[in-house]
Amino acid sequence: MADTQPVIRFRDVNKVFRRGNGRGDLLAVDRLSFEIAKGEIVAVLGKTGCGKSTMFNLVSGLIEPTSGMVEVIGHDPFREFAFFRGKIGIIFQNDRLMPWRTALDNVLLGLEILDVARERAEAVARGWLARLGLSGHENDYPHALSGGMRQRVSIARAFAVEPEILLCDEPFSALDEMTARDLRAEFLRLVQQNGKTAVFVTHHINEAIEIGDRILVFHRPARIALEIHRGRNPDDERHAREQILQVLALEDAAP
Image 1 (tube, rainbow, N blue to C red):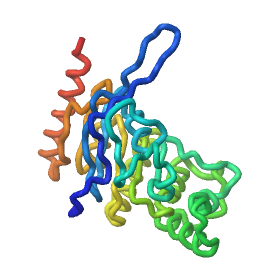
Image 2 (cartoon, rainbow, N blue to C red; image 1 turned 30 degrees about the horizontal axis):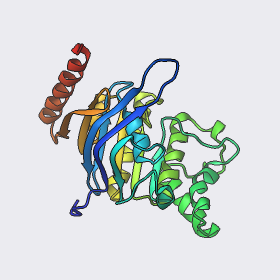
Image 3 (spheres, helix red, strand yellow; image 1 turned 180 degrees about the vertical axis):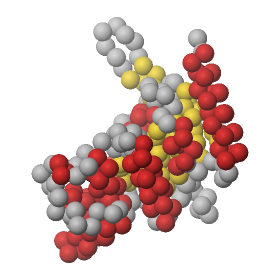
Image 4 (cartoon, helix red, strand yellow; image 1 turned 120 degrees about the horizontal axis):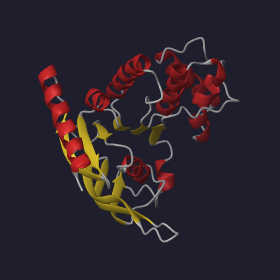
């Protein structure tokens, strides 16, 4: 993380959604400011409805802030959406595989969009499937794969385009805990080995502690209630867990 220029920067960001039927406006993000350095893995933790997904959509350029500044790799992700072609990989809660495409063809999708030559694209896609333990399943369709295997395909698809940033929206929450644990460890290893910057949205405390170099705990509307660095021993992890639980309990107690 020697690069001093942040990869992701939020500065006093507000996001207001206009609602009809006399219900008034909804403030989803409230003066949110943070920075993420190159090679950093940041877990964003909070309860359902705290604005994690809105923050995620702001980073990915799907929506624009009402006020404030969002900057990713030095560019505005909403106004310069085309710049980010191939620079951001996204892993969703559901695998979002195309059922009519094989595992290999699903991984190839992003490479096809980037106009990578077929021979090279196929070699890259096969390589990532192999790294994720799916050798021999290249020609299987999604319906023939388990939930964990489908999510491995989606991870391979995200890594295959060699993005600078990985955005992960609760990617393991639909899996059983044993499968999720294995995939978390595999994902973390791949991110670290390949020097990626990652934003990992979750509502599970243990997952945030396991994944994040740094953890941002959100209160609603999205604002940082706690920022901590991941501990490297059981005592540090226990202290982090206690801090997080205390902060989340304070939100419940708020009027």
